Amino acid sequence: MTMKTFTSGWAFQKPDQNYFKKFLHLNRIAIDGIVYPKKLLADIEGIPVLGFEDAHAAIGADDQVLDLSPNSEVRNELDAFFAAQGIERVSVPDFLDRLIMGDQADALSLPVAGIRASDIRHLKCRAAPDPFDAQFLDAESYETASTLDGIFRHSAWQRFIGFDRDDTPGEVLLNVLLDLHGRGLLTHLRVLDTPRVFLDAILTLQLHVPKATFTVSVSDAAFAALGGRAEFYRRSLGACIVPFDGAAAREPQAILLAGAIDPIVAAASHSPLLSAICFMPRSLIDYLALTDALGERQYRILLRQPDTAAHNLLAAVLTPALFGARPGVPAVSG
Image 1 (cartoon, rainbow, N blue to C red):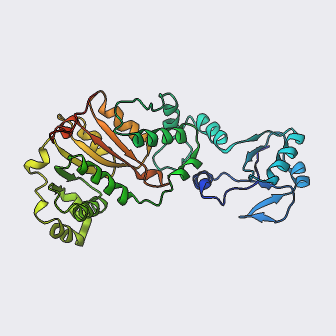
Image 2: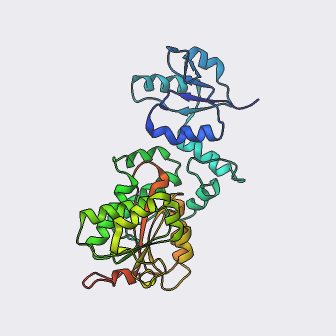
Image 3: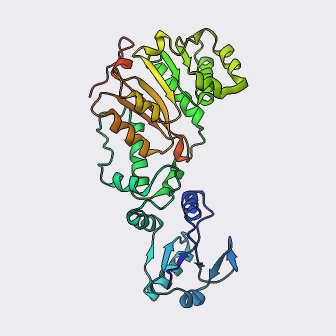
């Protein structure tokens, strides 16, 4: 007999369960019933609602019940019912963890594209971020890494709701650029790809700090991706644009801008290592891949999660050469 899955109460209308709902959809995992003390509705989103009498008859010893009880008197009634039946409920993170740990073939589709069950198992073998880790540029970077580590290590995807701060990736990118400008670290920005978001942030930076002096180079592929808007950016950026293969692009103080870590990891094989700002579509898994690629090199990392979309994680990797670009700015140490 196939094991059935029920829920104790229902919380899927809450945005903190969006990742779990996506996981169920991606993997075609059905919910066979929702248990409430009384059957006030026939169904919720097409899933049958079961009162206690129906639940007693429907739930077998080999079935599983996910705990989605609301925080109210209803929860107390549900607690008493399942305790009397001798049925142990499973939290959503524990349910997910069991599936991920058992998925040796990486057959599951996780709700963040590109992340596999094996990535989570490997994460569990690593040490969690430490507030004294030397590579974090500031406390917020550590807090971001630590929160994401807890989310993925323990399958606590509902905690992404804590990043709901009414920010956008573009706004957070601008704040990172403003931060680096305030530290005297903006000399040359080299746009490798994802030009729209980076160039919009650079233009906004110029509005905020009109006296800022830095140069920008844009790859041919990035300009091509802009289509008809390429000329707008060329005109708007004006004299600060330099050829992509020009001398400024090869300066150790250059900062690479990319929409993913791949070109940054590739650049990590060169010497000297250049600084970079990049998005991390695989969230913490990309962050770990990047730090692995950097190895024992000296760097600082600034990490920001703009919103509840895991793929919008943003990192700035800052090298000793960048910090040495301005007098009075402390150097990066290992």
